[in-house]
Length: 126
Image (cartoon, rainbow, N blue to C red; front, top):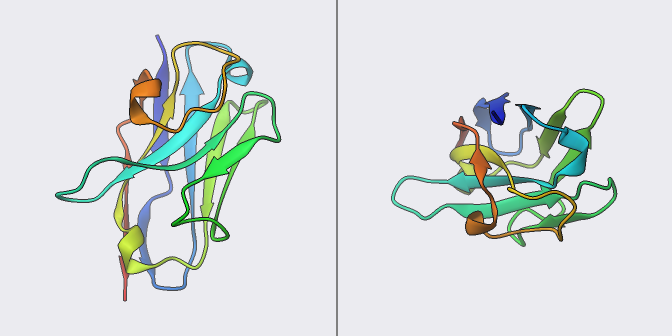
């Protein structure tokens, strides 16, 4: 059974930083792309960042490019999201996700992902 558990959310001031972690279990982590999404109240879930199974390929939403960095540690079965220069509009519940199949292209749509964590709240004050 695939499980994804996020941690690291909390309260930050505008301009500050947070690092989110997502611990995965239940299958061979290194074979799967991983993604981060976020959802603010009253808004649809939106793509934030993704990283391929083969370390080196990443993709970001335009709104976070240059501020957020996604990375993974396959030895620890963990994917990270380093968030710098935070803005109040970054406030949302952040969830990590993993697709059903291994070794595929880098997905950026929520419907391309099969497994989701419960999410962690990020709140950025102005």
